[in-house]
Image 1 (tube, protein in one colour):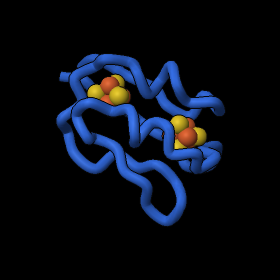
Image 2 (cartoon, protein in one colour):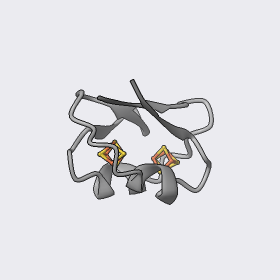
Image 3 (tube, protein in one colour):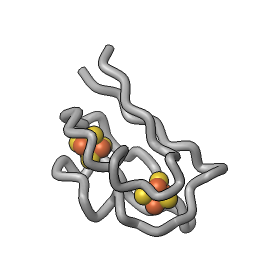
Amino acid sequence: MFVVTIDRETCEGCGECTESCPAEALAMVDGKAQVVNDECMGCETCVTICPSGSITLQEV
Ligand code: SF4
Ligand code: SF4
């Protein structure tokens, strides 16, 4: 399975990742992105789109 991690310290709150995730695994919480389920399918869209490099993806 894939585990996506968001660094909320560096997240700029643009919302691009939450809007582009096909699995709806990300949502904005208190103005920053957060992982909200374990449905990540490893597409890397959020990693690529994030302007601040706050998202990392791991296959476990
Ligand atoms: S890698 Fe793809 S499926 Fe996983 S959280 Fe990012 S956009 Fe969503
Ligand atoms: S794309 Fe990056 S900066 Fe924008 S909300 Fe997502 S994690 Fe934060």
